[in-house]
Image (cartoon, rainbow, N blue to C red; front, side, top):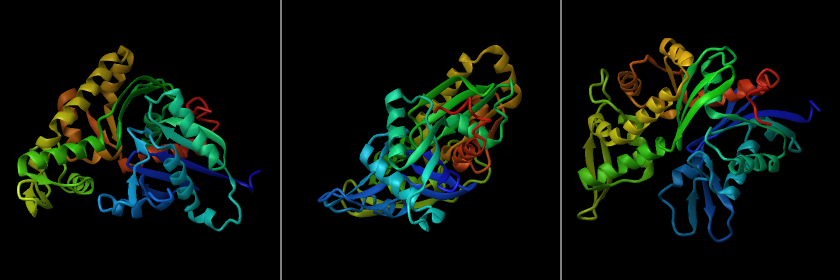
Length: 339
């Protein structure tokens, strides 16, 4: 059995898919596929497909198979998972595909039907044993919290499609809140801001770049990023043009969405049992996911909640790290995994 079974942990994200094999992150690629419209064959996945986004002609379309943290395009997501598993370096050398034991992480607000979709996708790519784990739980394990303890911890995981907020104690989720405001919504906010304030029409990839280079949620940053020049199409003249933007403008653009995340955190806190609230007062809030990298987010949440806020190290990989740890110690984390 051991010879023919490989173990992999997958974080199927709206924005990025990460795979761990033998304790190493072997795949870290954007969750996007490029398809040929004429024969519905996949031309490119991941980084290569991401380069094509917004630059395709009518015969090619780029698809993001996951929307708001769940599978939106079943066929594309299956092919993407399949190709990504086959691209794992140590499995490439094999003559035949080994059967896989997988742990896949899912959003906490997912329905039964959506869960089955993830499971079926996994079984079709040769998954013999498939376990699912909730995202906030995986993030908590990845951050290094001992989830078995009778002690409350609050995790806020801001991904590409959803923001997962959960209070965890005794290896279970006591109260959780899942809001569909995360990286994608932030990108849309930036696109709309550039339209209304600068009459400049920019695409998703440019918005993503702006978010990474000058993205911030408060205006008074200590080490502010330099201003950035953004190119796009002028909405008035139709000519290509350039505008210079700073982090202050992006903080204004993202303000409404960040307020909604703050409200969701406050709501989760208000549902927390008093004993766990006492623990959270001492332990604070942990941030994971790509959204945690927005400059000043920890400060802003700390001001709103009056609690210490910590960003996990390498927040982008916290969830997949936790999924990988759960995979290695399946017996220990039996209570957390959904078979």
